[in-house]
Image (cartoon, rainbow, N blue to C red; front, side, top):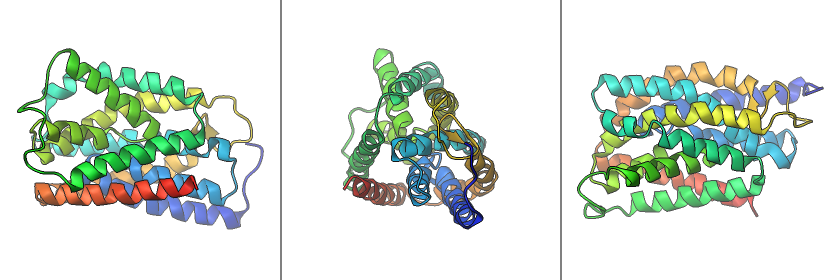
Amino acid sequence: MEFLPPLSEVYPFLLALVAAGMVAGFLAGLFGIGGGAVLVPVFYQVLTALGFDEAYRMHLAVGTSLAIIVPTSIQSFRKHYARGAVDLDLLRSFVFAVPFGVICASIVTAWISGAGLRVIFAVIALVIALRLLLARENWKLAGDIPRGPTRMVIGWLIGFFSTFMGIGGGVMNNTFMTLYGRPMHQAVATSSGTGILISIPGMIGYILAGWGIADMPPFTLGYVNLLAFAIIIPITIFVAPIGVRFAHVLSKRQLEVAFGSFLILVSIRFFATLL
């Protein structure tokens, strides 16, 4: 953090952040994903283009994404809650399980490589995308969401893997709820709430995991870039309500196809970075 990049490098970085914020905010409202599935690959490519160390690029992309998801998820949740679409009972049962999964993932983050994080991101995104694109009405595990220990374990898994991906849990919670017969619109709305449970402890965990690492980009705290945080947050908060309106206009199948297609593109892009 001893240097500032030349202005010729700062301007493209700022433009990329503005574009990412607009897309991420829209997708946060549309899919309840917090925008992380967009922000992480964009940040990674920007950091690569600016020549920052490969050892921490993915960690910084994920950590910054989680920080930005905090206000985005809150804004998205408020809009969905106002429409009465959120399953508050499920969210209450996740209050401890999801953050505990986040804490466990944050501990592992300090030891996993950037390539490892990219593999996790790409594989999970691909699996969920295929499930959405090939979905059939009879693809259900049961008529309703399980209770007790099973629900707690699922909440832990959602928090654990979402933290590695820098997402707000919508990717996994949408799949979980629809497999148990819940409407896609309710799954999207409830996922905005899991984003709050994941992003706040996740942001803190990535700050601690990256604390004291040398030669990080300017304005970086742990694995969170404060410049990106400051620029993208107001953009995502402004754009998220637009995505919410679209989410309540589209049909269930349209949401599934759009979400699945988006995840396929993200997965392919991350697999390409491993070559």
